[in-house]
Image 1: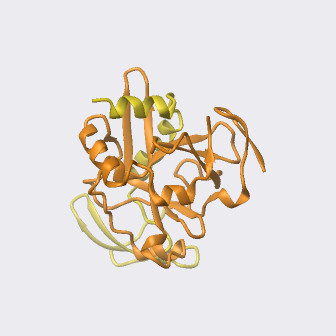
Image 2: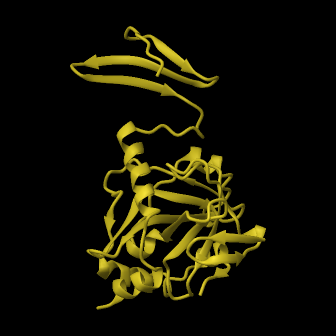
Image 3: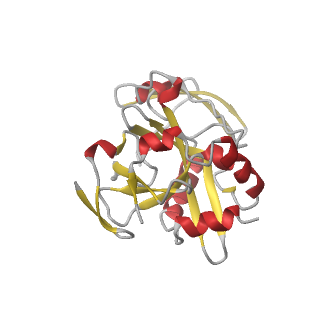
Length: 75
Length: 169
């Protein structure tokens, strides 16, 4: 992991077209501005991880879809 | 083309049926080519089978069937990324997690797979709204499932028909 120290108001540029500017600190909360092309997705780390984990869990689904559907629509 | 699958053995598919992940399924960045396999026309749950890894397949469903009011905003970046030109080209699939013991069915409606049904490019998008859970409990919302099925005309929508041509027995 590349570790840098920045002052408020300073920025970092990632690759050719992603820029992060550190705007404000209030206690432990850091506000940052992100400039990136529209097609680049920006995720909060914990959400990204949760979705990755759920995808991995989903890939281990262990019932045939016909059985699942039968049970789901049963009254 | 013939593909090997762990669950269904060897199956024959058309190149034209492929769904290409232009953006990855998170955690599966190395897999980009998939095909949608159906069981039959009355079962809206389908398999999104990897063409590159025989053992990777996801149970998926049109999220409107399990949650009829599902209408998340699609951001411009994603529309452009997949070259979506009209609303009618948009298809969404939610990845479903299924367990038999105990019986558990949850759908990830926070991060659906967005598909351009016209060019068959797709991306897993992450919605901002925490009101759409990563583990939406489908069993608890059984009543909605029945409503969703009748609203979408028996669960088999035009879009699913466009995306999936292959039947598995």
